[in-house]
Image (cartoon, rainbow, N blue to C red; front, side, top):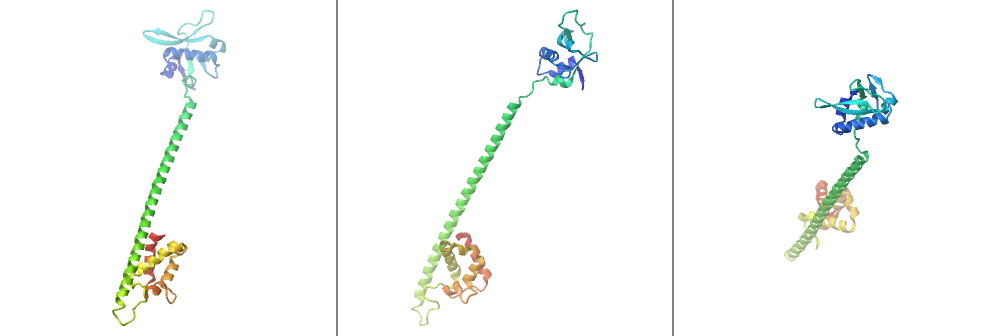
Length: 251
């Protein structure tokens, strides 16, 4: 343990204590505690319990400076001023300084944690709201696209039927397609209409793209497109790409 003089002890206790307060606090520690708690040495020797009980730290003014010393408050002649070398231990002196209130620190830490948790929860709630708004906007957009596709299919069917009606009387040859059938150039719209039908009536069909391709073009003798418009693309990949594109709007 490092030892220090009385003057050094007062420096260690500043600025928490004024010199007078430091002297009084040091005196209290010497009087109340034994050597193992607050060591005191005189000329390098441990001071006895009896002498500790009557020891008092005083400040003597010399040349405009306050010089600490220890005097006896007991009966008798007392101790000569400045005749002894008094020493304390650094750690014991520093232990006299006011210690922080750990309860206050714990309460502050708890409050900070609660604030951080609240901020995190608020951020999470805000992110959830933003995600919900985005999902709602996407759903609204998909519904609008589905509505537009349905209307486009209906218009295409109306044009095809009108064209069939004009072509029929103008030729003695039978119509190329049965009444009510669509032209091959609009096979994508015909397929889109069927996908919309599945979305409304049989949504399970939309989960298997390979099955949808087979439904549209075969390998049966006649797939859906062949039955509807008398024609179907020969390349399954082209049909598959169109189905994948359309499913973005009807799933």
